[in-house]
Image 1 (cartoon, rainbow, N blue to C red):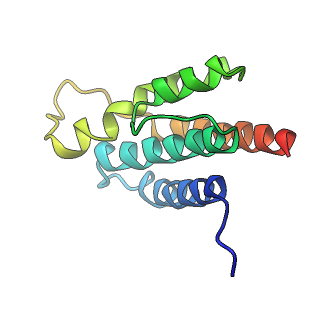
Image 2: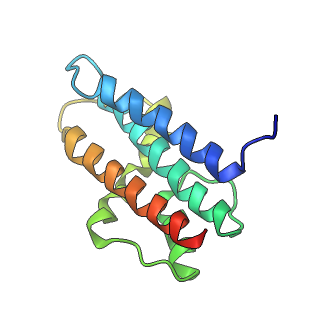
Length: 132
């Protein structure tokens, strides 16, 4: 059996995080930190899939803004309606391992962000399809 291309692996892994969001987001008892983590991970893996597909080197990072900037630097036009995806970066590490005091913290707009993740997947897959 021939191993999958790395960009396909990233997209498959992103789909696993999307499934976790689908299951966890509607549950009130699921913390914003864990839902945000899976949203961030899905976005990160999709962006890295496109970077790998385009043969663009990137450093090991969870910073979504940095990954988006790299794509833009190489000619991709990132959808303005996805700009808030960058705000998920802290969920990768900072909020995953630190206790977040719920008081005063705004609730994560789970379903709005889930829709953005779906749009991000469509954008990434369209870019890859166009490049094939």
